[in-house]
Image (tube, rainbow, N blue to C red; front, side, top):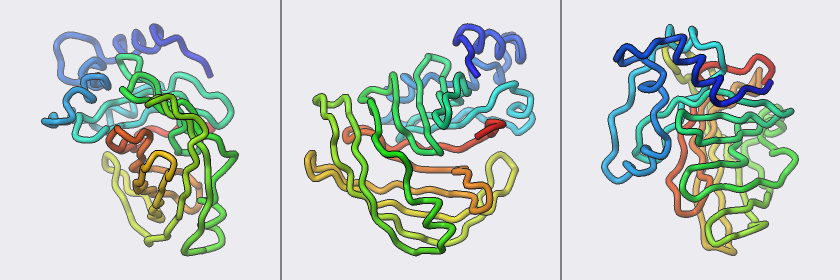
Length: 224
């Protein structure tokens, strides 16, 4: 599906109204750029309710970058497995089966991730406790291209998580990553439904000089 950003935001404004209410879309969809600028001191999160999310006509996620505020991003476009999530200030996070594969407007951006698939779901279905794989990424910082990422996936265990009042049974998996070319090491964490393969929650690093992005699915796309 394809939505113009103007139409998407105007639809949200019509849905909630802009009468100064704290639940207006402009207050719910916190500025992602502002979130980047406030990383040092942190910022109070905007309170979201399940009823507000259910009233939205679009799929949406909640994103928190470092110590910044939680931001509401709505699904603006879907291209096969690539989901384009858009914030109020038109920052974009593109995910593929839950993984961040590109960002726009987030300071230092991830320009692309090059792999067809990850062994996450095969690992879950085979009940494997450990596996390794590699991928390549392009990073805006210093114009790095085809940076090799060596990853080690480690099964942690079953964990029930709650997102806006709904409990999900998930498997928790940690991913230890290193990019020797640029001296970058980090750890990602995924909470995945073993039955549906949905990554309901994740903590992902997308650029070497940026804090991790915490992502939760608030309203799942109908065909994702």
